[in-house]
Image (cartoon, rainbow, N blue to C red; front, side, top):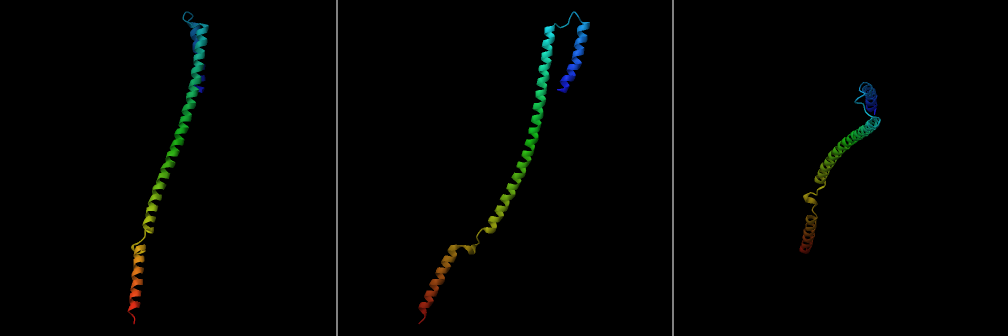
Length: 121
């Protein structure tokens, strides 16, 4: 917006000087008004483009922060998976925690005790 005003301030005197010295090739009033309106429209579009660029830069910063946050979250998830794998190894039942082993061991002990009790006279 400031750049557009500066250009307008520099362009207007230049146009006035050109009309004074170049009477043969000067612009008509209608052409001058059209040129003025075109300059105003371009200034407005330039200010809109500046605002759009600013908004996009802010979005870029936000997306960069979001990307960094997601990378940290991924690292945390990998660490969590690693810890869970270690926990599975610690909690995994050992060979002597096998319920079938204890069942058949109990059956053998009971049948052995019954057999030995039957041998007593």
